[in-house]
Image (tube, rainbow, N blue to C red):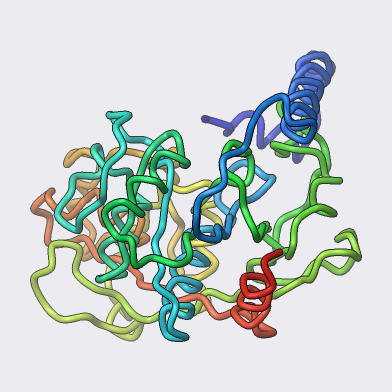
Amino acid sequence: MQTHWLENEWRRPTWRRFFLWVPALLYAALVAVRRGLYRLGVLKSRRLPVPVVVIGNIHVGGTGKTPLTLYLAQALQARGWQVGIVSRGYGRQTDDVRQVTPDDLPAVSGDEPLLMAKRLPGIPVWVGRDRVAAGQALLAARPDINVILCDDGLQHYRLARQVELCVMDGTRQQVRRMLPLGPLRESWRRLQQVDAIVCNGAMPSAGLPRTPAAFLMQLQPQGFYPVTGHGEGVDARHWQGKRLVAVAGMGNPARFEATLASLGVHVPVQAFPDHYAYRAEDLVFPAADAVLMTEKDAVKCSSLNNDKLWALRVEATVSPDLVAFVERRLKNGC
């Protein structure tokens, strides 16, 4: 979904906002009716034979769901859980249910599932528009799996879940109106029904509901690596005195720019649409010594044969102990 002009409207309302009220009311009504039908059992949720942890959001755009999924998968695996991951695979050109392998093309698997498959050897990642079918296929292939993480599935009510985690960007202004009048996929009241809220970057000073548990997630840069895979990684000091370009095809490119600045790499980020499929000509910058990008972009650019491309690896840290919280929920069966 392209939201550039809408995002400007959310930040600085103009006369056009008048025409967004009716679509927003209709959208809110449809969302409420759909959720009500699932709560009444008219529309059926399907429960998998293992517990499911859903990691999603109520805002459009990037909030940090994939880094959190990577963090939880690794942490639960370290505690002895056999973890599997399912995802829709947004941006895929096919609708089949399939396992993602590190050698897949992004058009087949989706960029975020491909990133997870590359980063999590030994943890199966399956994609499908129907997350229930993806989970069933995963368990048929790996019956040893005893917990499934669903990346970006908060609104996929067909899949029953034991734990709901809602990721929010704590550094952005929280506009509490639903699409298209604001950035919300669901009502702000939905936050009262999740098990925990994970705030990326900062805890808002006010506004979060009191009932769910709240956790702070920080993305820690781990250095840069060549997207083509040829050569050694470098740290931020390597870019001192270099002519740099930065690009980001994500929901919140300003976050990537801020992360680079925190490392002393001050370069404006050229924004591309979220999940953008880069072409070779998009990344030709003759005057630049290097082009910096996110890992999500890197998985789509590794075949472009451009040795100027470098990706920043990040790792999530969450406090207090989110993994212990999730484990308690899983063991208590709630």
